[in-house]
Image (cartoon, rainbow, N blue to C red):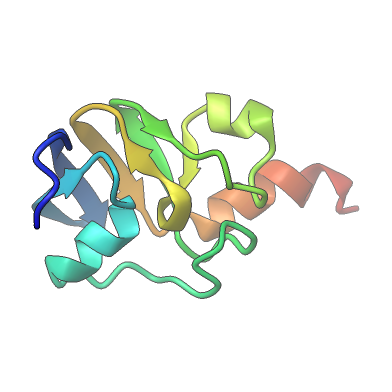
Length: 111
């Protein structure tokens, strides 16, 4: 039995200079929808702890209550962990942002 109450959003995900287009239900993570569409998004823990699946949201909105690996202020700047991000609108995002997220969170502590 399919869930007919779920909204479906159009996702545009840029990864390694290529744009990928796929659909994602509002009760599905962007990572799982990308995997269904055979988009090779890097991932590791799939629990919102590591930052392997980090992306930067360019347009649209996600709900990511379990994104423990991203500080709230950086979430507000558009960083998201795709493994725990549920779309709330059509999205345009750039994946492969693990290094950028790491630098934004921890780079200021390096000498």
